[in-house]
Every structure is written in structure tokens, then in C-alpha cells.
Image (cartoon, rainbow over all chains, first blue to last red; front, side):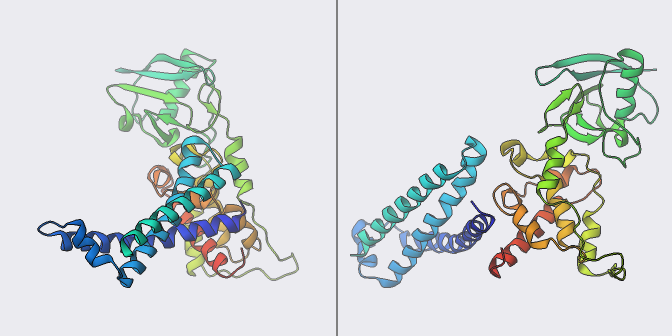
Length: 112
Length: 237
């Protein structure tokens, strides 16, 4: 990959990490606050269904994960398995798509 | 006079440790120990040194598991259970005994565009660089590298990713990036960007911890990341 491409990935990695730091904090804080004396599936769905703010927040969360994780794995694969080059990047691009699709499916699953 | 045991790596990559017994002496350095072995006990021992005073950067070895400049390392400070274990530098091929092959190490300086590229001729006025300008102060903090390879041998990223340029080459590139007289800035930033360059650094700071000149290559690498980021955001990279 070109220096420009590598640098773009690095920027995306840092930017997505900043988004994730916020998302994880909000996610954990909300969970601890909402659960309190126990939470049923019906209660969760009653809060998430049709809630646009919830949809926007978790869509951002999922997309940040789909960007962040494959770029991190890219370094792990290079350093642990000495796997570099196009084959690695193609597999990771597919993995990023899978994360995004599965994540968004889950988000829409409790929104609708 | 008391003596202590020294295990010394002998042979190439498939060599083994050989035991010696060396007498203690006042203010004895690890390089003194190796020299004693070669002069008095086994003349076939191969090792490298030149200045003996911490300037040339040629005598670095692994001493009890840690990369050090041996000419400025006192035996008192590193002796463990009356024993020294001496091996060639890590992350470099062994030529023989305590001599590591430094070619890849210095080739990476060239790959990181570690040479100064000026833009003026002898007919131009001498460039004025204010010693207290921020850029020059950053250069001063990083310029005293003696090329000993201790940082390179101490870097776990180099161990895991052999293509990684390493702390010394990147530190050198950083001193040139901040040199107002140098004209190869963008080309050098391209050379050091990417997953074999500054972006591969995990900020573990092994280099900064071990550098015998107390430089901080990690800070220089962070500086390179910032400069590469600026160039990328300005669409220059």
C-alpha cells in the first residue's frame, strides 16, 4: 500500500478510537443505569423500538467498530503471522463488511 | 583478587555459550572483560570496538539479557550472582561470537532517507539557524545518536516485524525533518510513513529506556506521526 493509503488507515484508526472511547463509555454507563434491579427483553425492546437517537448512536458505534477492528488486526497479522500484502487486506476488507452487516442487522433488529 | 564467571556466545546463529573465568578489577567495564578474554584466554574471540569512550557506537552487546554499550557499562552494575552472560545484539544476524551484522540496521537509515539534502550552494550565504528556535531544540534533543544499535536490539516491534525501520533510522529522519536547511522533507515523510515506518511504533519505549545517550526515539517517532498527519491533511503526501 502507498504511504498515503497507510497514513489514511492510521488516521481512520485514531479517529475511530476516539469515537469508540465515547461510545463505550456511554454504552456501559447506560447499561449500568438501565439495568439496576434487572431488565427483561420486553423492557429493552420497549425502549429501543422506534427510538431514532438510539438507532443513530448504535449505528455510529457499529461503524466505528467495523473501521477500527480490521485496521488493528492488520498490524496483528503482520507482526504475529508475517502476513502482509493484498491477500491480507482483501480478507480484512471482507471482515470489515461482515462486522458492519452483522452489527447493523442487530441494531435494526431491536429498532423495528 | 576475586573472579567471576562469564558466558560468552561463540559461533554464528547455531553457536553456543562458552564459559570463562575473569578476575575482578577496579572500575572494570564489560568491554574490559571481553578484551581480557581475547588477550589472555582465547585469542579467537571476535568482538567489535573502537573508541572505548562512548563515542563510536561499535561495542554494543547483550549483557545479561539487556542491550548495552559495553565500554561505558561497569561490571559492578550489571553482575548478577557473580555472573555475566554476553551475547551479540538481538534483532540482527550474528556474524561470529559477539559481532552482529549491522548492514540491515544502516540500510534502514538509507531507506528512511537519513541523508541530509541541502538546497544551497557554496555561493549562497551560510544558513542562519537560531539555536533556541523550537525546531532546532527538537533536533538538538535527538542529534547525538552514535548508531550503536542498542535501541534497535531493544525494540520488540523490530523483533516481530523485520521490515520495520526501527527507532534509530526514524530518529535520524526526525532530526532531518526538523532541520530548516533540508529540502527533502516530503520525500522523507513518504519514506517513513506506513506500517513499516513510524506508524508501526507501539510506543513501548524500549528504545528510550535503553538508549545509552539518553535520547528519546519514541518522541521523534511521535513527531514524525504528527508531521505525516499534517502532510496528509494538507493533501501533500
